[in-house]
Amino acid sequence: MTSLAAVSPIARAYLAWIAVCLVWGTTYLAIRIALESIPPFLMASFRWLAAGALLLGALALRGRRMPPWRSWPSLAWLGVLLLGFGNGAVVWAEQTVPSGLTAVLVAAVPFWMVGTERLRPDREPLSGHRLLGLLVGFGGIPLLVWPELRVDDTGGFLRGVAATQVACLGWAIGSSYARRRRDESVLVAAAFEMLFAGVALLIVGTAVGEWDRLAVSPRAITALAYLVGVGSMLGFSAYAYALAHLPVATVSLYAYVNPIIAVLLGTAVLGEPLTARIAVAGAVVLAGVGLVRRAERR
Image (cartoon, rainbow, N blue to C red; front, side, top):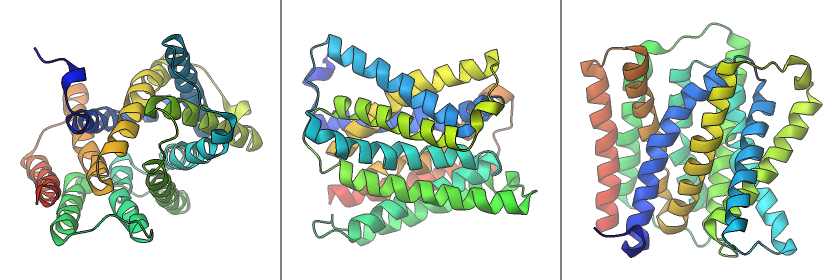
């Protein structure tokens, strides 16, 4: 049997990308459960502080070299962009935006990522096939969740929608910057970014008075533990590795696959029906992924 170490970096990057698609598709449910008793910014802070500390401790035990002090400001900036804005704003939005619509709105991140790349002098080429793949893939997302969309509170809803796009923009800028850094190992950088993001989110949560609303329940703690171990340590580390070895347009396609995973999880866990509409939407999304992959091969 071939060991993982013998697999090429590009093949490992695609395996990491698949892990991101699978793992992050399950985190919407975990976030929703954790928010039942833990306020959004504190919940996100606890998640990233715990994940960063555990990952950094494991890397230190393995003798990994820590980044020098001069690298800390850029790692802090990345943590705030990718996880402070990119995740914190999504968590905050899930208080008022239906989960199906949240998936649609966050699925706009590939367009933000490609658009951000186009503003850079060293931008990646955007072929017609790749752009077509992005458009086709996004077309499957509304088809997937449209019947589940509900809008009740207009004010909170609009603020939540705006928050998801702030998250997309922060994630796009951070991803564009992250893939061009080569100062330290991917996992060490990810651990420091988690810690810096956790500190930033803790400051925000404290400033808006979330400690007064903090409660603890076994259900929320279980969901938070899942977010720490699987969603953060595994998911974000896999994302950082994929981003370092694959084109931005390809990596960004995880946002199209996540809603499919979320629907399948609802079918398996909550007994929701797997309809023909869901199957067609999934096929459309995967067709978009295939078009982007075809553009890369060409």
